[in-house]
Image (cartoon, rainbow over all chains, first blue to last red):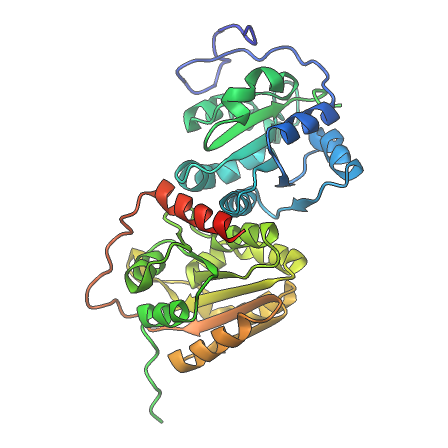
Length: 181
Length: 195
């Protein structure tokens, strides 16, 4: 799988075991991603919106799929844990700012109890963006690595199927601007 | 006028647990989980070890996934205050039986008894304003038992605040010894069998 080549971490990023440069953004059908997640058994949707996820939210609405609005991302992780205990496979939508909010919940709940949860995390601040996104934008992939959360990119979801979508505990798909259409 | 002593936290937990049969129950982290496990361990008890503040959220996920089955959440005041933003979600979506018990001693007892702000917060009013169907406060185990019995039968979410003593127990409850993945697996297995 030649999803990415190993490169130097961008300046300011924390040191992690490996840094892989993201593959180029390839517009990917939100419907195709939704169908793929369905094939993998994901059947419970909730989260905190981000404009980069609008295409995916549209698919949820068009398919009549129930999705719940969470007040905070860590609370969404808690709800996802309860759903997982009841045999569901949850998908939690959030902006990368929410990854910061959800960090302890991901470590001391989802990972600790080995509960499934797929995070659809938008990558604000990946390139030029408003200032509040810059620091988290620089940190996002490294943060996922530090947390031990396997991740890939939404447009390459198929190629990371086993590692990201099928494991015990949380996995994440990063969504960049223009990636889901 | 002499005021009757408030029940100890573990007494209140034993009273709630004594009313449960097939209900899944989520226990807040810290002393609540430890004492619940000592008072009456059951396969349908989910003991939260970390993730403070998320007990209500876990209960909500269980309820949304099995809307016709009852869910019990046993929170503390510190936990509820941390996860207060969950209440509007419960109020918005839960239409089944959802009993949210809050053991309120006004302190963070698991960390040494530092004061919380529960004394100036009307949890019942917050719950009702968030869409819960009913809320109340009890101060004795007899009232607690009868209210749990009655409200376990009622559709739509209920919040029951229990005023408990803030003294530590004579012998501290040990940590929950079951491994976390086992705690989750046994709850999941029971729920899968129940259908």
